[in-house]
Image 1: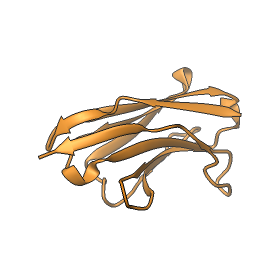
Image 2: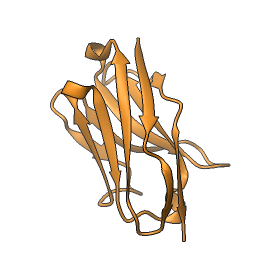
Image 3: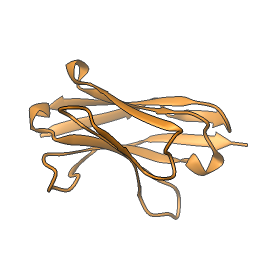
Length: 119
């Protein structure tokens, strides 16, 4: 079992930047990829970005392409989300998630970290 803990959320003015971190512990060798999702009040959960644990290939949701960057540090068992040019519509609870294969669902989730962007 993998445990995930997010950190780095906060309050930021539009146009600013934040860097989120997700620390993984437990059976991390069984992890295929990790991802960031977000959910704003009254809205469905939205995919933000994912990174493969081996190889490091990345993929982004359309709403964050060109502004957010996902990265990983295998030695630290951590992934990061650098968020630049933040907009009020980026306000959400950001979750880190993990899955064990390309065919499986993201079945391990952290508790989330709140990001609030004000104009």
